[in-house]
Length: 286
Image (cartoon, rainbow, N blue to C red; front, top):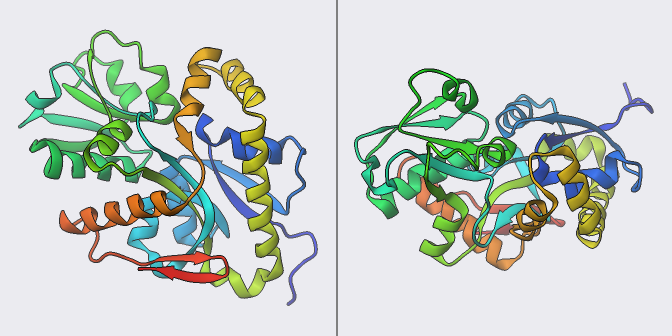
């Protein structure tokens, strides 16, 4: 059967404030698009892409590293930082260097952030901690909170004022101060299997996503106000938050991404370092 006229390209969206600059102009109708937008956590979107239930999505950068044969990377799009990111934070009741031998609770919502924490612990901070998955918000309501926990996304922003966890490690800041290159938390990818079926629609989708990103950056004041309305940040905090985020995938971001892949391989998180294969049209960065 041929492609049905009413079918739309399924696009994954992280349900966090960090993608508001890109998805707001799409969902508000400011920029026309060919998508059915499906929201979820990074881990949920990784799973939907792995199952083939989405054609295009933002995914954790480690999802691409683990399954490079499944995807092409969209050019010039990422969620990255060149310093503090504020929404990927290790909260601790003791100084970070005293976490050696401790158990650290890690959010199950992001695979990349947990892997980055392992890289920092093993190769940079020389900390041997047991990192276990869990729901940070639920555990913190209990009687025996963990010594430390890794929170991401809006949850990390909501928990920033917890006085019982006075020691903090912003993973974006730690990475940048260690390596000097940006850290890429997430990429937009296309299913390789969708290329033939969707053909020209995919090229249009790439242009639309780029146009949405550009609109969001040009209208950051509005995005900041919308983020503040949705909480948990004040307008000033939201402005500071978006100033720390970058949404391109230029040479420096690609360098940081490939370094992360090499370090993932070094600690055994991936079997080998994948090439970065871009849909622009298809080109490869080794």
